[in-house]
Image 1 (cartoon, helix red, strand yellow):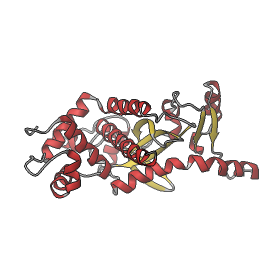
Image 2: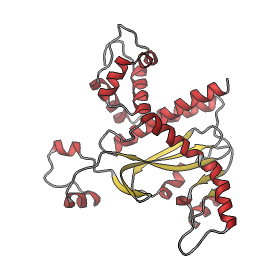
Image 3: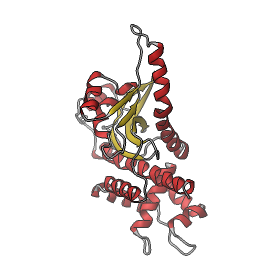
Image 4: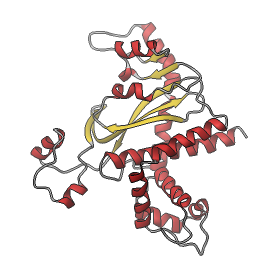
Length: 288
C-alpha cells in the first residue's frame, strides 16, 4: 500500500468502484481525472494515487478476511443508532447480476453442472473460468451469472439483509434467510415467485402477515378481487424495483467483474453497502 494511503481510503475506493461498476484500471483513471473522486478520498495534488494493482490487492485482502458482511452489519447498526430502524414491514426480491459468458464445449458444461472440474484445464485456465455462475431464464431471455437477494424495509428503503447465489437458484429458496425479525412491523411483501402454501404457512407460524402477489395460469384465471389485491400490494412491493433501478442507473453496465462465487458475494455485498451509504446520504438531506 502506498505511503499515506489508509485502509479507510482504500475502502472508499471500493465503494466508488461498487457505485459506478468500474474496472480497477478505469477506477485508477477516474481518481486521477475527477476532482470529486479525489476529494471524496481525501487526496490532494501531492498524494500518490493508488494504481490498479493496489486496488486489486486490497479487495483480495478483504475477500480473504471475509469482512464485507461484517462491514454491512456494522453500518446497519449505525443506521439504527441514527434513528433509521427497519419499520413498516419489509419487501423481498432478487435481481440477476450478469457475469461474462463462459465459452465452454458441451462436455465441459455438463461436468461443471455436475459440480466437477473439466479435465485437461491448466491452472491458468482454471483461474479464468467461472464454474460457480449458472444460466437462468427471465421473461423468455437467458442470463448467466448470480442473484442478489435482498430484504428492504418499507419506510426507509434501506437494504437490511442480502444473500448471493448462482442465478439458477429459485427466489423462494432464499425466502426465510432474508426475513428481518428486527423490523417493527410483521408485514412482508413479495412477488408471486415466493408464493406457495408452504411459504404462507411458515410466515404465519413465525408471526408474519403475508402480502404475496397471486399468479394466474392457463387453467386458473385470477378473479377481479384477486387482481385488485395484486394492484394494492404492488403499490408497496414495487418500491423494491427502485433499488435495483438505482444500482443499474449508477453502475450502467451491470456485468460483474470477478471469477467465482466468493468474489461475487463480496462484490455484490459491497454494491449493497454502497447503495445503503448513498441512500443514507439522501435520507439525511431529506430529514435535515
